[in-house]
Image (cartoon, rainbow, N blue to C red; front, top):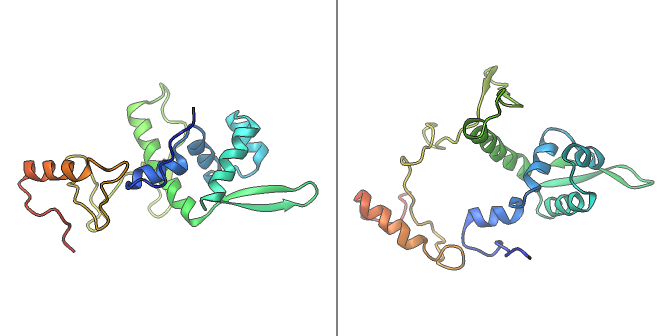
Length: 178
């Protein structure tokens, strides 16, 4: 069954899922972020078919998330490295991992932990406010319609949903303040 493309939807989540939303792509991205950069090593690590891995890597290259770097000409062989766009996306996987460590843990604890090099402490990813640095938590953030609110595919119910949330919270204006 073919998947519905999300690239043209008026939703940032949908457009992101159009790039990373299949079963294997986040794991391929994880491996490349960990420095597993050769096709055969990624394939062996994941146990994914060569055809699927080729499709996923080509898709990530096409969207500027990873870049192919030749390391051998005959036969042609490439390493895969994160681009700036890919490195930022890999941070999203840290948040996904933190959620998984908390809500679907293994009996013996997490398979990988991360040390923050600036402070030297082992840490988990969390989403923080870009203005004050405090953690963002559900129930403590309120959506506002952005400058390009388009009630088209993937977002037709968003303006009404935002209006309902504002009504419940007693918020009168529906546009963010600069």
